[in-house]
Image 1 (tube, rainbow, N blue to C red):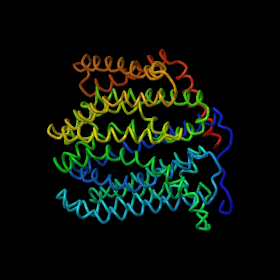
Image 2 (image 1 turned 45 degrees about the horizontal axis):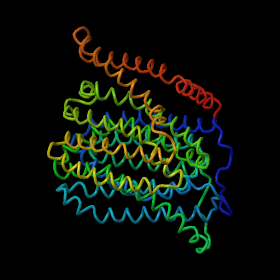
Image 3 (image 1 turned 90 degrees about the vertical axis):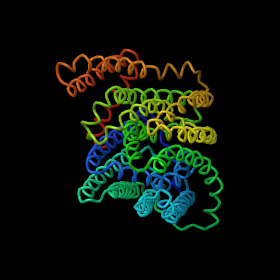
Image 4 (image 1 turned 60 degrees about the vertical axis):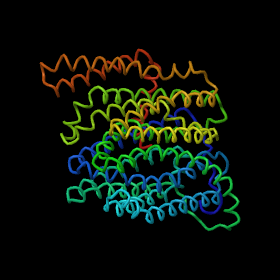
Length: 501
């Protein structure tokens, strides 16, 4: 593939091909969710809240290099439905590598001053190492984008799951050997390294020499799209990490450790699982950009499926989380209970808007997301500052409240972009919150009734199990077509797996 052109995948976008890719993305996300959860639970017993807090501060460096620097170039390749010639891919590869390298050097230069600012000397080497771990992911930008553009999510899902498993084992081993916060650095390095190696091997593309003027010819369009996408990525990055950095600076690493653990519990079903599924849906939506009715159906049905998965998990975190935390973690982590419940309400909102960014990018209008992100970032930073006076629970509360206030604006942008009515959007998403509400009431009532007979923990587990049964029954009644479709795709994925496809 080094000599001429790499055509954009022009094979028919059939329903089975879309569903197969979505099923693989869902399976990969579920595997990552399970592996990440197990790894986090084990490390929660081996690390102190202060060590977890130090890691939370370093994540800002890893995402800056591995996500902010490269996401625009990655999405530009997927969104492009014309010829992907090798000069274009070379331009994307060297652009992404250069951007990530520059930001990695910036982190290395600022690591010492940041550690001084936080009065935490161990931060400097941790920040530097996390930036280098992020660089491992950045150099795999083009091959990952090519696999996504081809809807080859089987390779991406299995590679990421393998990386998470190996990274989890390496992190636990490092923690057992006394590495402390460095255990998470090891985890990031292994996950990113394995994912990049597999992507390069599977994509079948390598950078090749081209005349500089040929490569430069692609830079204006590439950088224009990438800059628009990355602008929102920067704003989202600020929103995602401003709370961590402010808590770490004002309240200290221990309080940040509690907040980070509470946040990660909410993020597992939303950002880890749904974020993984959104990855596959972006190229699907991009393929449908010229067919408005098909785009509408794809977005609304996918949003319904996402909420059907996320809402029962988040509702159970709200209802049963405080009783489960001491059992899953230990009594050291009991202070996270209220913040975790508040953040789970924010997770419900995030599940509703998870596909907004992919939608705007797919139709070539990332500027809409950027404008919304600019408004959101200003509001969230103010909310975090106000919330600090009330501890981590205050930050969680004002974070959630601000998101709910901004939700109508976000939805208005979506319905305007899709040209659908708000009534049709509500019809797509209502089954999940209605069923989750019924489930929560049943679980809460049963737990209090059964507590005296079987003990607290047994009552909680029994209430969760019965609540999920009730949830499934209500969903089947409210959205039978969606349930049948999901069942078909699960069976199809099993057949596809057995056939080795």
